[in-house]
Every structure is written in structure tokens, then in C-alpha cells.
Length: 156
Image (cartoon, rainbow, N blue to C red; front, top):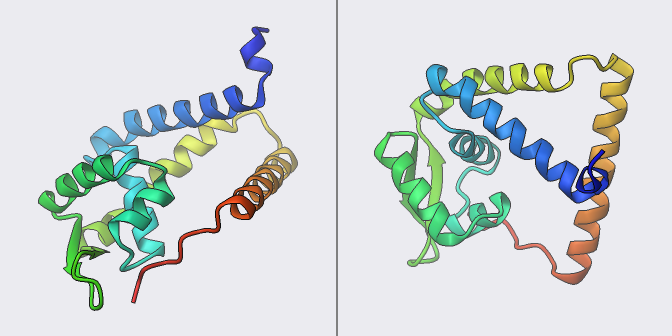
């Protein structure tokens, strides 16, 4: 086993990268969307009306990267930007009917990737893995929040 494969951060990053690549491969023909675009849809479905800066923070991407991604998604009819009621500089982001109609298909692709990734694990192992990953995520979120309090949702 290579040294980097024994390092937690490398392993978690590689798993995430491979899941994203497999999702892109599977979704290319079914959805005409990338993994990154589906992540935007999923976050907006759960955070209707958030602004671009908050979404960039949630997705851990730069403001310029999210701007370009959202431009392409708006042109494709997946999202819409509306004026923020109290901040002239900000826009609220919302999914279109087209995006809502596609969410189930995106989840179906994601479920298939999950099934492929977890092949060979028992139901108990999958449950334990998910529980442990949520615990690790919570630990890391708690540490980050203690250093840099989270940005409040800008939805109005």
C-alpha cells in the first residue's frame, strides 16, 4: 500500500474525486448535467433563495467559479436569479421547474453511483460507514465553526 493511501485526507479526497468522475460519466447521457451542476441543484433545492456568495461557500468554490457555473445554468434554464429584497448587490437563486423535474433523475444517478461505490459492503457496514462519516463531518464542522463562525443563510 502506498504511503498516501494510508493518509485520511488523501483517501477521503480520492473517494470524493472518483465518485464525482463516475457520476459525470453516468449522468452525461441521462441528464446533460455535470456532477457540479447537480450539486448546485441539490443545494438550491434545500436552500431556496440563497445568494451566490453563500452557495459558493457551501460548495467550497471560488466566487468566480460559481459565477461562471451559474451563468451556464441560467442560460440552460436550470436556475433563475431574482433581485434580493433588501440588498441591491445580491441576487437570490432559485431552481426552475425544469430543474425540479430533473432532481429525481439526478438522485437516481447518484443512487447508482453509491451502489457501485459500496458494492461488497454489508448493510450493517454501509450503515456504520455513513454514521462514522457524519461523525467525522460533525467533528470538522465543529472545529471550523469554533475558529470561523458560519455565514448565516441570506434567504429572506
